[in-house]
Image 1 (cartoon, one colour):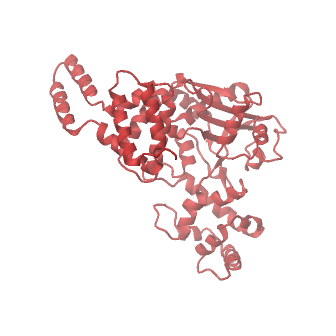
Image 2: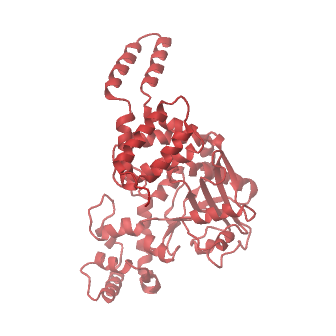
Image 3: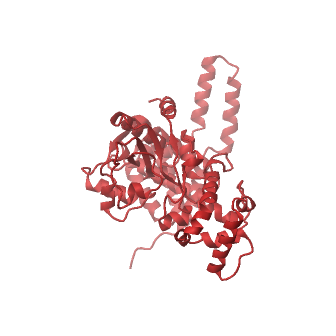
Length: 442
């Protein structure tokens, strides 16, 4: 008979008790940390949020300790500088929670950095599913990881056909932007006029924490097939453009810590050194969710916070194009749709529309404009670009001119179903490079 598993509530309380012991230990207790890790691995994913909240409840600074500490520090504010400094140092110590001490002990232990990264990834997943009240916990981990992943701890390495087989396979398996079926595809991405770089951390030297793929081309490519398609090859003329076409974070727990920005800068620095004729630095980026999370909800008439409306979309089409789209939708659905929005829903819900030249002509200009609005103008509740890829590049200082939105750039089934086949090029200028160098302090 197999060993009976402990019930989730029992596991949670056992983990909380272990966490308290670890936080109170004078040094990081490796055996207890390993035991806690094994116990955590037994906890069902649906109970992780309960554990996180329990840890916050038990190990954060209690409310009754906060007010006296603040009052004591406030009395010292009017004192001399030395007394005030001592009071503030005391305040910081008194307001350091046992939860923070737990995280520090984890970071100081062998393998603890990977454990922290995994823990933050689980908390971020819980937050995406609607779990609230974990912002402070996640922020504490992010602060520690940011300190650990500063420039001095990171090294840039180029991945080439001569790199270890295990490393090349690792990258192939974690390429999520343009997934690969075989290692041969990875080999083509390391061929002539192709470069691949990874950022490695000294505590995790075997795998990169983030990697980027670059194509050196003559001019700006307007479709991904020109870079990674079966017939893609080196530029016929001397390359003058560096295209960042895939950036992948291999550790979900490091999302949002700015490592991609550091990687783009360091790679640009190497490319500038090795290829003085390359003057243009751009991306060829997907527009994830353009159809399922943006355009389709608008056409369905769902309540959204988007600036673009179905009525505005309908105004983008000529009368001739409207008649064509409605006729095609009627042929597909067996009845005439009641509106152009309904017709567009029917036509765009599958990838076959791109095989119809007349539909392609009718949809090209409106879809390009919709994509541009989505990435350049739509903002979330915090004022950031709504699209995550746009947010990454635009917050880095890149720009996306309207002419850099490419229709028919990714006509794979995945590309058509996710973004109606559109991609965008974010342009990084020489001024950006210089400004980023100053901001990063490199």
